[in-house]
Image 1: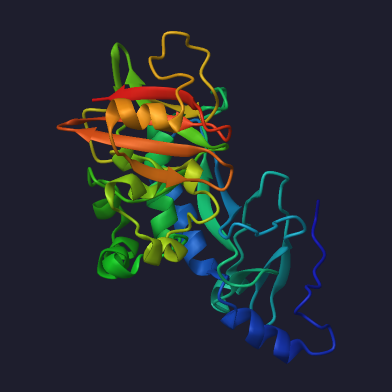
Image 2: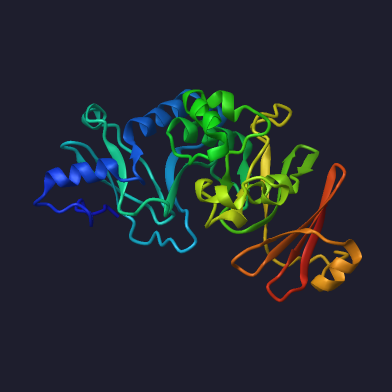
Length: 313
């Protein structure tokens, strides 16, 4: 659906005020940088040869409502509405005038309420499966397009990554956050006969391993989507681009062999000891036990009983 060209903050009888406020609005993104992201996608399309590039808006605060979000490309004289799909994705048309006016992609939402990502998906995959080459390219495009918020503790790293996204996204320990479509309990990479479960350090913005402390979470784009957030070893060349990523949903297990299924928290604590605990607004809790090079993760449902558990090496 094509969006209306008049925004809540843009009174039609005050064009000068519209431009000034739009250009300074904290949630805006640079149109020029997003076009540069499109150029980078074209140059690196071999990473995801069957996919197309779309951009996407996502909630950033817990209570953020993205229903009715309106987007537009705004410059000194340019005002172009942007069609937003039901899943929050959109594309941008190339416009020389918008580039010349150093336009912004503007949303009728205040700062900190939403975040932006590149969305690159090979068609035909199940909803809970992603392709590694697609996500490698999402990181490259997202950094070049200036979509990612910056952690105070790694500002210099991110500033450098914007100039050279390949250098950042090709590292093994990249903190670029991806978000699943629903809350997740596990992430596994598989290619041919090889399969590897990601450890707790790669789930939930690394909170269970001391990464992304509470003071930094407002910068990480993950406040509203913490239970969907994960990272990947993007720079590990031993995993080819056709590697698939399986996202295991945060739902009770049907596996009757799960040794802890049905345990109360007191029973789990008595059997395993104290754990690092991460509580979500949904009522689910994840308990993590770190043992040498492996970890053991237990998911508790809102009823207080263990829904599933997993040893990850």
